[in-house]
Length: 203
Length: 276
Image: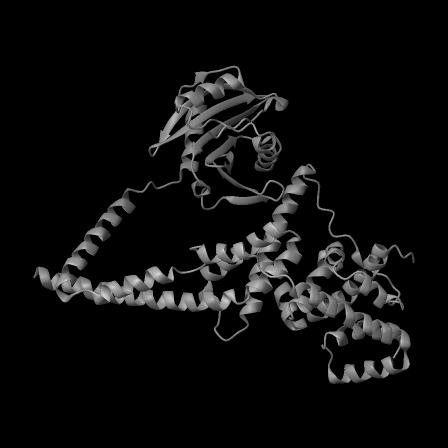
């Protein structure tokens, strides 16, 4: 009787172990595929956070969250976009917390809301000096990108750096495709404006 | 097509994001307009420059190691595989013994799980505060913050001490303190009152896991400290960690003001913390 019970427990345990093995294998496969996007995620995080340590925290938390909900990912779909969405949502969450602190420090004054960045967008097209500007400012592009408002920087990061289509970028940022197109255009104009200022070229 | 109409389309052309109709329309305009042709070249050059610069950015090695060694992130491959092989590879006569051992471990685990306290230590702190307010827990009186902190620190043989909060700008002064034992852990309690406010400062050794699961987390990017805000029965609390020391401030102040107080008068700014 004792042996019978023990065998039963053994069978149960074996099948549990096999179930766990399958889950671990699935997880492991997912993890390995996810780590192939590490450079991309770090790049996006770095341009979002503008600071290496915060970027590392963002990426580590992204992987942790992704693995925690890996079953929600449909194999064969775009894992890079899925991971980037998690990263962006976490960044957005942290930034909102940061805003809360700022509003606390301002004695709970109401958030003044985003300024009208459209007013900052230059109206003229890039002039003949553009190639000289780029040549001179090789390596400075990161500083210039950091200066432009986030709502214009994000589409550039996703589409130009991340190689996402407008549609994918719109999905990650939860906005219409038309907004991505328009912000990329305005964002590039702002980069142009910043480059000119960097070089000390007056209007 | 006018230049103003073409502008945005030119930017999208550089990203190869135009429909065939839009593309042919813009390309027609570009052939006739050197100014817009220049703008198109600018968008292309900028894209190329950004791609070159960003391609040189790779994840640092320490980040890769952090992710690989993070048990939340990567399953423990070697361990899970070897465990599987061990079970399958056991000699048949050893299997019942293994199963019995497993059963014993399972029962012990269930026993300990059942014994686990039903609430986190942070919520017990709120209960202690209520008991102090009702006079059920006596306090060792103190009129001076340093004296109070020193006596509390001595009570735990100097292993740790209360964080150096100073509430005097609010007109809140030290009243007394005590040491409570919660689930085998010693908790220093310092009570401050004044100006209609009452602040109780709890200090103990622990981790952020000691915060209630439903606490609202606030991240201070300046100090990189997470603050956990929670409330019960009209009392508000904020928990944060300084090294291996957990500090909970409990007060009748509104949660936002308490959070602000913790941040502005927190010892991590003044470095008065004594976490020896």
